Image 1: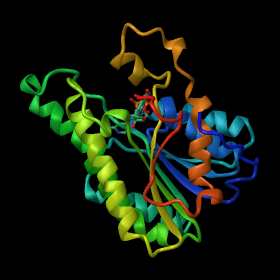
Image 2: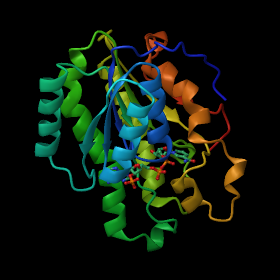
Image 3: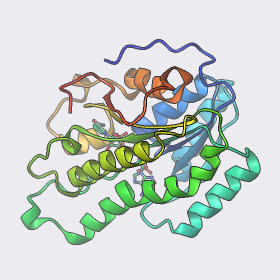
Image 4: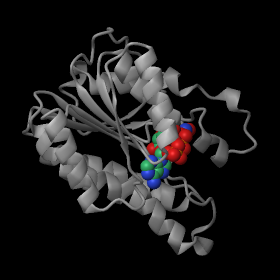
Length: 251
Ligand code: NDP
């Protein structure tokens, strides 16, 4: 596990957007960021799940979050501009984006892969983070210390049979992170990195490995040290890195 002990006010006064914030790792990240002082913008496609996370954050007495229901599969450029305008009007700037939402798609040989599913996975996993980042960059430039974090996977570094569009989308994610990080190399107030969470006890993991007992993998809350490190000021000098929340070798 990545070793880092975050002080409780680590993210005080920061505005951080989390995609896929209603479930799994995104939910845990939203709760962890809020617990460390951030105002989190909860973005996802299932309103009830976002509302449940909102209620948890409010009940714990953390800074009041915001909810943005958005389906990344069908979101248009117009939706991202609207999101950016809303954040601009409400906060004036943005200190962090965690691109976490992803679709697993099919587990099948490329020879049989359904082209419609392929498109859907690429839209949610690659096109949406591209458009969202492009639209939100002006707000990130307004921050004194902004962090953009993409979510990768072991299959985004070494291709593996039957992982289809998901694996290809994660290679693209690593590439997008590296291109953007290089472009912003001389922009000291924005850094861009990626996290490979490693095997984690979520719906997606259960779907990908139906025969695996869930308890062999850590809970999303257990892998938060790297998320906190990359969102907070202690990682200010880190740019263009793809890091492992559970250490090397986990997929
Ligand atoms: P889950 O499937 O548990 O959660 C994914 C979240 O993304 C859900 O909140 C889901 O919303 C949201 N989401 C999916 N599609 C869309 C969409 N079209 N629009 C908006 N939101 C959407 O996944 P994990 O928590 O396991 O995964 C989080 C990230 O970590 C992903 O990027 C995944 O690839 C990566 N990862 C996970 C690993 C693991 O072992 N769990 C290992 C390696 C990488 P809803 O709840 O409404 O479906």
